[in-house]
Length: 167
Image 1: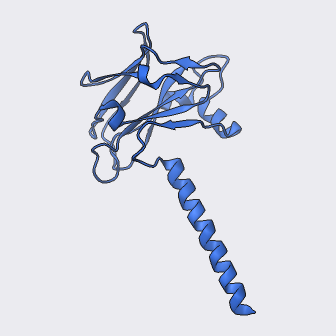
Image 2: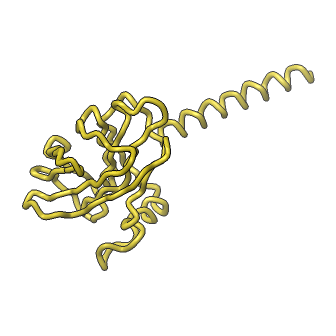
């Protein structure tokens, strides 16, 4: 089953175009989002058909440039509907700090008896397939990998130069 995993309603600096919504396929099978939709508190609707399919355990990030849904910094509600129009999930939040990522608290509980906690599954298996539909912004994972790569390169450079000076 697909759920709203997290949102970034108030990015650091200029909000315009930097906000995102992440969906998670917590189920054990491929989910086709044809006919699914996300709606915010102001009734702005985004048809998820363009996203296509989500693999089990996959997280899809929907950037503002893709959805054109503006998330309010002082609070909002997101609704996720399936192709039959049934309400699948909601995420409601109040005022948020700049840069604060809001996790859907209901994902910390087991939604279906046969499923374990989806976030724990990701941590245990290391499986995090991620499509970024807003290529202009690095997500926290990409940024973390970039910083780690730069730090390890700097460490190797300094190590080589220190050893050369000692010879």
